[in-house]
Image (cartoon, rainbow, N blue to C red):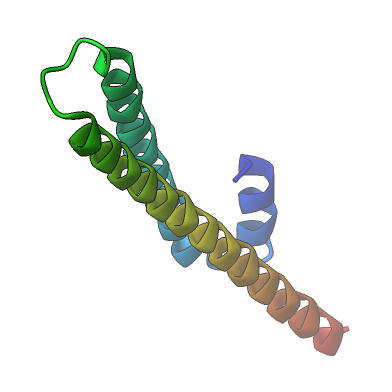
Length: 101
């Protein structure tokens, strides 16, 4: 997430450690999805020249798409957790500053 948001939360005394972990895990999932996509792309590009039976090629492609979907869903869930975590930290900081005023 943008450094300015993290800086604002940290300046207000918030802890962004968990959110940063979620972001790192989401980036890892997206990298895995990209890798799976490149594998799928290569498989489709070479399908015409392959000696593998077409049925097996289609099965492999379907499995690759499922893998990509899994990684993208994981990244999405992690980003949702990040937003929820940051909102919670922000609300805690707002509540604390309101009580102190």
